[in-house]
Amino acid sequence: MLPFAEKAKDLAARTERNSAWRQRDCFNLIPSESTPSLLVKMCEIADPSGRYAEHRTMKGDEIYFYQGTDFVRDVEIECQKEMAAFFGCTDIELRPISGQMANEVVFKGLVKFINRGRAEGQLSRRMRLVLNNELIYGGHLSAQPMGALFNFVEEDPLTGKEQVVNFPVRKDNPYKPDLDALAAILESHKPELVVFGKSMFLYREPVKFVADIVRGWKDRPVLMYDMAHVLGLYGAFQAPFEEGADVVTGSTHKTFFGTQRGVVAGNIPKGSPLRPLWIEIKGRAFPGSTSNHHLGTLLGLLMASYEMNAFKQPFQNQVRANAKALAKALHEHGIPVEGDPADGYTETHQVIIRVRPFGPGMEIARRLETSNVLTNYQALPDDATFLESSGIRLGVQEMTRFGMVEKDFDTLAGLMSDIIIRNKPAGVEVARYRKNFLTMGFTLPPAEAMPLAARILAGIFPDTGYAAQFVENLRRVTGA
Image: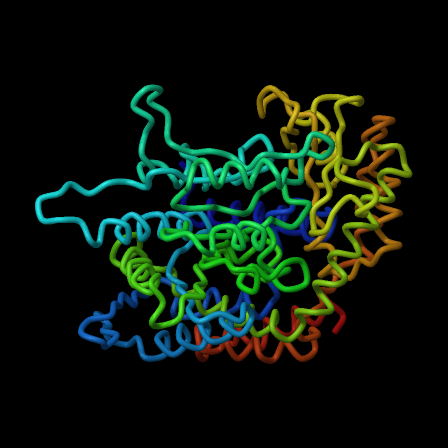
């Protein structure tokens, strides 16, 4: 076995090569990822990383169970305010450390909520029925019985399957809901929870349509929107709270600017009959699902929320314009694009292409990766299984942040068509083109960010000279 110093040296070298490859040679088009800014990354490694700040509401006060947490407490409160301003909502729960955990926290809280008035001695029950998007039509895994919904919805005694029904889809466009059929399903099934949101996500969800139907019900369902993929597009793409949603969940590192965490947002004012649900959600966040809630990434999320609130509108507009430009360019280069051409194929950051004419999705995704284009193979609605995927899912959010605009995606689409249609290796050409997009935008420019990053680093490693060396090396690398 190699000594520690040799293993550390080897791992450092491999890490450098991987980071350089992904950050300088590759176009990252995976729709569920995004590179955080320098300042967000530096916050992630600051002292709160590895610390604890457990807290819960007791007799009206928020009680912390560890000392040395005043700074982190203030960070969490400030981040709640920043994200509440972003959503325009009443409440934010930040302790889930992933989007899937955020969903599970809501499901746990809802089960507690629906059992709050049961008689003494009466057994608790699960949710009677849930309406969601089917997996093959883009539904997110975490809102499925095999995902975070597991154990929180009742089973049909005849079939043994969970009581879940799916949004009906249009025959002419399976990425959009069939509203007439949806109205009938709502009236006949009376779900206790409706989960909007997808992972294969091109169009708006029918939040207002459902909210208008159920508003007068005696016991209406809770309306939850899993915005994991489109969280950073809130408002420009869709504003669920304005349309009647009660709860929004999501991960904070796809179209939002990072770090990798989860969030639950609520629009449940005090005095609402649903207000006890928010209390249960907080209780399921802690102590129900988390202890250490990764305080380094919480600090980074505050910095990311500053960035998002500062650059929200121009970033969102450019992302959506770029997605339409990429879809149009791919179509013009001979690659079939899913969605409706009349809508520009997409209203989000995502573009979905059908590659089966040129090979299986898994094979084409690997071919693209070999040529430095990173994507995500995807089962389309008419595929039998995920392993027989006909599609590839693309996202423009990360490369938008690195400065790409509409015309740049036409060039990239041409390179992709060479790789997909003609099986032409293009790694060298792709890497060369990527060098045009190395400076991150929608944040402070490097010259302003580096002194702040050095200040954070100086606090972690006082009197070592690391901070000054860091700034010098970063300026040399970036040319700032």
